[in-house]
Amino acid sequence: MNKTTVETDNKVPGTKNAPGACESCSVGEEKEGRRAFCLTARELVEAGKDALADEMIINRHLIYSSPATLAFNSPGAQGFGVKRAGLAIPGSVMLLVAPGCCGRNTTILSELGGYSDRFYYLMMDETDIVTGRHLKKIPQAVQEIYDGREEKPTVVMICITCVDALLGTDMERVCKKAQETVGIPVLPCYMYALTREGRKPPMVHVRQSIYSLLEPRKKKSTSVNLLGHFAPLMDDCELYELLRQAGVKTIREISRCESYEEYLSMAEANFNLVLDPEARYAAEDIRKRLNIPWIELTRLYQMDKIARQYELFAAAIGVKMDDSTYRAQAETAVKDFKEKYPKLTFSVGEGCNGNAFELSLALIRYGFSVAEIFASIGENDFLYLEKIAQLSPETRVYSNLEPTMIYYDCAEAPADITIGKDAAYYHPEAAHLEWSDDIQPFGYAGVRHFFAACEEVLKCRDL
Image (cartoon, rainbow, N blue to C red; front, side, top):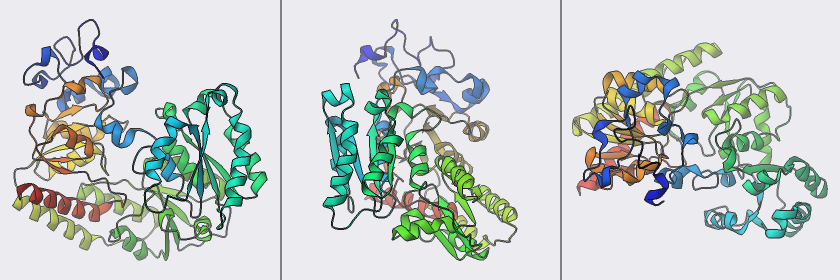
């Protein structure tokens, strides 16, 4: 993005003509008076969540294609974007219906282990886009996929892009017609970046879609599903053992289902545990269709909050859980790390397995310094920001997608270690922990592994 893109009457958000701007955020060499816009935690809280500066609200300005967008923003990007998530059902395959430009990055994804023979492409040309004739080709393409595979697929996912969103395609009808052709489920999944800020963003919809095939079964009181992630929790996560303490014998995660039948057995659950807010819609849909209630647990890094959440969860299902051993292990891990690195300064981004504001608050409460947070402010983040403002009022908050981030200068706030790929981009001199593996951290185990990973990257930097 060139400089003229972010100019408006020669005034750039974050300079003295932008009310509430952090005066200390000027770039080292001024760069023609431009600077990256930020507000301190204190300034944000004093203004209040109902008076956020426009620079902090991504639909009120041009969006800067920052390192954050490269890591997570595109629904089809790396990690578990729509396309990879849509293949969570065992034995499923995907037909991507898109112009060539939208399909190319899927070829990179298909090189990952286990995906090379699960992607198919129906490329759209200009005539397709103008007339919509490609829609008639989809049932035929699904039939060809089915006939051409020695091992028949359990499900065919049809992934479509913003092109069909703009065309107003009724994909449910198209999938129903294709399903009649092959006799197996055909489901839509939408790679619509245009709906990212809407009521049902792509990653919310794909979660609902992949559980939509579950049909009513007799409930088993000792069976529970974990919903939300497309990869399993860490094997040593205490949540598994705490559920067993509560009498649960079968814990299912879609990522651990080895067969289509095992996936369908998720309909036997007595209740669902939602571990990611984007799975709420799917959980509520399951409740309505299958009468399976759900409870949400939040990923936290503050140990007293983890303990309180487990306490409330146990009370809600009428059991007792003893998490004291796991909490003691996590407390020891934090204590040992603090003794080795007593004066660390962190820079925390949102491109990690955690809420950037909650993680930052946890680090501050553990006695570390958090100089910066790179993240968009969500509806519940002010709960964390209010406490950050009390403990570390000068912590700066940047919006990754704000155009003035092209003027960011790391010399203004040196960091010893960064969390998240986005923060790493801004601080090339620091130790970097991406903390974004597929395998998901949770609870006390997440705290232990987090500080172990921090120590590992710090050791590598010092070598």
